[in-house]
Image (cartoon, rainbow, N blue to C red; front, side, top):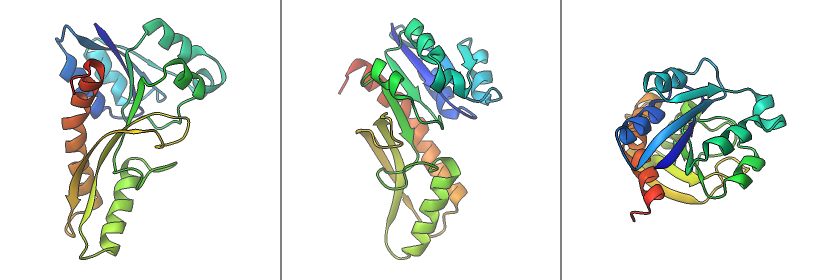
Length: 196
């Protein structure tokens, strides 16, 4: 049985899709959900699905080995960042080489880096599309390996969608969420079982 650990900071809709995708599977399961926000809805979602869920603070993540020890105990086959906003520590990346992936709500290398998450990305894409009126503009998702720098890891998968002049940042966000929900669980499965 392959073991999946999810890190998330907020609502957890991607985490929920991943949990649901593997629910009932005899090959892979989400075994742990971790959050840097003790009030994150993702923890509630995990508890409802009877999955172990914890929150942690900066000290546990960066200054001590508390989170690292927990991960060693859980022995994940893959660690999935699904809307997790903190930079991942090098000590965890080193301990789990090539096993940590992230989803970014744009087509990297565009609209990536520190501070580029959630609505900030969609607003930047919207502004870019407005400035380039008449030219086709695309956004989408990038699933990539995690490195000690924001959004710099090797690309694993991208999917794109057109941005029209009628789109608002909220409409762009909706289009991107649809791509995330469709592709993220499938890419995780592909990585776990090397089906491609």
